Length: 114
Image (cartoon, rainbow, N blue to C red; front, side, top):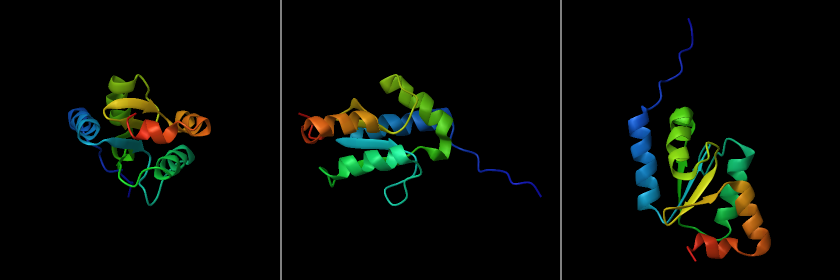
C-alpha cells in the first residue's frame, strides 16, 4: 500500500483565498501551520512578534497547497517565501522585517496601520 498525500487546492481557489484574506482582515499572517502549532521557526517568530501587539489578527496555513500559495502570494508581494504579513492590504514583510521593526520600536505602529 502506497501513501498518497491529500491533493491540495487548485490555483484559482488559493488565489481567491489569498485575495479574500488580504482584503477582509486588518492584519493577516500567511504562515506554515497555525496559531496553536506553527510548523517552522520563522512562522513561530512572526506569530510571536505580532501577538505582542495584537490580539485580533488572522492567520492562514499555507501548507495545504504550498506551491499554489507561493504563486498567489508572489502576485501581491513579489516574494514566494512565508511567513508574509499584510496590514490593511499592504505587504509588510516576513519574520525578519517584523523583528527589525520591533527592534526599532516601529512594529506596534506598523501593525496598527500607521
